[in-house]
Image (cartoon, chains in turn orange, red):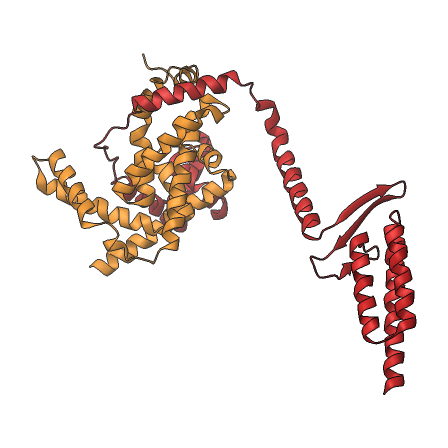
Length: 195
Length: 212
């Protein structure tokens, strides 16, 4: 039987700290992927995931409604992403193609290769496709990208996204619409330039 | 159905969220028959399909809470539980914080301007003096007994230098009066001092004219 987030949070607050490990186990993959898709750097996404859970571990008592643990966790992850965006804005603009260090690319390639050792060609094709998508997604304006990632990959409802981002529902929808349009435009542009 | 109407609900149609089955059929019917809306709809679906290529990455690491951190946290939680909750304070906290900030700014401003705040039956009076400039702001400026004595002292020295015996004698008298009258009202002292300054200035002008 799987306990609800609310139950685990309450147990944690009652002093059973091991319950937090279950929450981490349950949410770390989703939070990591949410951050990774937003910032596009595997190593940094891992560090930010760690920060997110470290903050949640300490601040969980401030959570008014333990039933909303997941939304709250996304908010912390979102703040981590936004801080990274701000830091990135302060830095000199780096061409996106060399944004990922060769080391992280290698480690990523190694990871994919071990996953699909039987079919390295397919693995490589998939990697290239994901790399291309990751690069394109990074070019979408930040606010639109956040909504796309939440909707498309986290399968959140529009009203949940509005709650996490603290914006009106209509704004969520317009950002989503514009984001998908931007993505489409970027895809056409890149395909045009690459051929 | 108008295209604008369709465009407004295109996202709901694409994600099949928050849309009634009958409405969905109406929209699909419009999309099938309108080339512009059909293109928009197709583009959104294609963008979605492209996004789906990026499947979830499986983390190659596992996060765990360190046992020593658990022990520390356990103590912190126990301590927090022993303190009564301040949840009821949350709604008033923003207002309280604002008032606190305003009060701190006011205190800082009064300190910087060396202000004195007094109140009586007629209301509150704020007397401000600029830092070490000697200049005063507002009509009710303020000098301490000691400062007045020093100022008169300087005027006596200047007067003696100009050999204006009559004025020096008058100033000595003022100095003596100031020394004795400890309970002199500040405003009264200030008025007297200003009159004295003017008198001194006039005499000095007169002296300068006669010696030229």
